[in-house]
Image (spheres, rainbow, N blue to C red):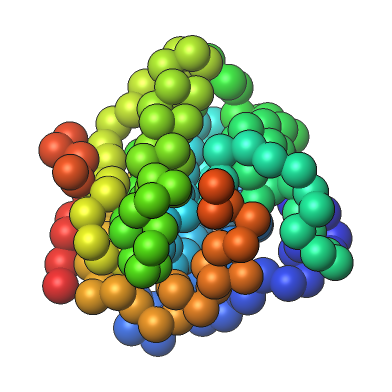
Length: 200
């Protein structure tokens, strides 16, 4: 993560879980080798939780679209696009000692939370991209919770690799985060389980 992106992320102490936490916003990613909780809120976006359990290195990204140009206004980040978000996160994890051939993934999001977005299938495009990317790169997919008509809040605990997912009814915050990108993209829920817990 660049210095600018690091400053824009929110690091705080979560009183509910009693743990240091980092909130990942759209177009951001974070790699760490320290015990903490990585948190993000998803609508049609996708978050990937990557782990190298041998090295004790973990990371999360939050991307909006599979690919595209950077012409999204001032402050646009390459990490807003899936292929870049994955490579940037993996590179930062490798700098902390992770090895690409040991990475494992859990993927979340791609909900239909914006009226009219079903026309361009943003969630499906994101889903198809990340499944294809992981398969091509030989990164095992341990768990997923994708698609559906709801937003999600994802909590990734780096000390254990456990993920909690809270499903939300068309979260106003998630919609607000994604609305600026609606103009640029105009024109079944996953059944895998694993080490994730769903709670309402």
